[in-house]
Length: 73
Image (cartoon, rainbow, N blue to C red; front, side, top):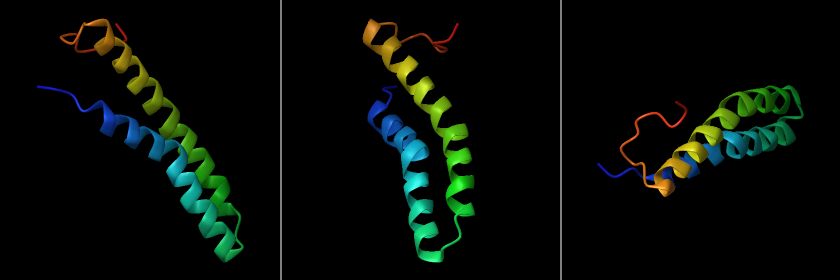
């Protein structure tokens, strides 16, 4: 089965940047900056690992090892 790396990159970028931008806008509209602070923590906790895993899987696919199930090992 072919992997959709485009969707993986979009989801990773949304987890990293999209949530932060959304809650930054909410913070601007409400004046409560706790939304932005907590969304930064969540964005980093969810976004950075997803970007790393997507990047590692892309490297594995480009190297021609598409049958490898876990790119970390």
